[in-house]
Length: 388
Ligand SMILES: *Cc1c(COP(=O)(O)O)cnc(C)c1O
Image (cartoon, rainbow, N blue to C red; front, side, top):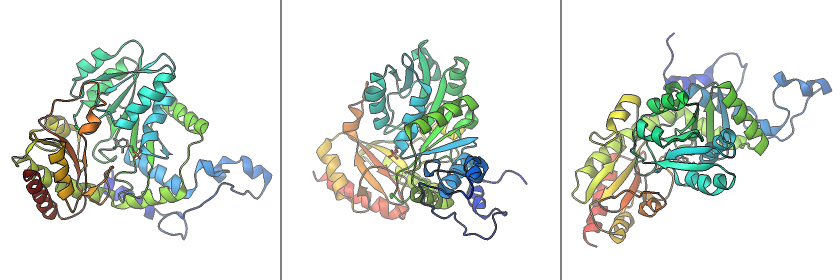
């Protein structure tokens, strides 16, 4: 049989023969201690974990599912999407090294680089979010040890040419890490494009219900994998079986939710882009977006998250718009079933070179509601904006 689609594989992993009579989903095994019958058994790794920090059935099943989705040899789970990015950076850099990354990096990772990592002798260089691969590599120095990619980037959603950058980095002996949260492991497979480490905030689409925090780290290279495994062991990182069980439950419907939300988000994006109050919608799946060609070349789907640049106006108008929405929750994060909205202009101030935008920057996450209802809600919001 040909390789099965992601959608089928995420489900077939549950129904595979050979496990005897059992529930469809692995049970939640809460354990610190795991008992053995004989003293010799305690040293036999083939009998499974001897201590809960190694994870029990639900963590093992989730690790296998994420590794399968990302075409990786190995997967580890971390307590958040943030730690899924910080752990590989800790594992793969040493004092004196430099990290090179985009100026549009996810904010908390930027804070980790400039606060925690800098204090331990690892400096960071930031490249322009819309830099070409040649420009990015021209920013690298002989100290550059790691290139951290986020594509599309946070808040402004610029795309970089990931396969070309991974190839250029490898030629210089630079290890690459990509935050693959936007693609949810579905729409883009970093390891297949030459990236060494792919991370995800499973908090977002895998969780899918805004009720858990979890991260994943995938890698195949043995030396890179060894460093990752050692660092996770040294730091004592582990995740609860309950959270892994919830993420595994989310995985069964992940491709359907992701595709449906992408369709709705594109409808909302097209509608907003045609409104006079909106200068631009930042979304690589939208034809005309500066990243559209790279997205169309490399990605098989899109996240349901949009940057919305208002045409002029100030924070008061943007916030009147957000206040007037009744179907969009006011809250951070994304990838859940519910639509969300935030005002992001203040976040841009942390960048080395904040972008020159026509007006306030909003972020919309499009959930599983009927898109026509969301559009009607946005129309009401724009009415409130005009009356400010
Ligand atoms: C949300 C997010 C994270 C962090 O995930 P948490 O589980 O909230 O820590 C990391 N990277 C990106 C791109 C994100 O959007």
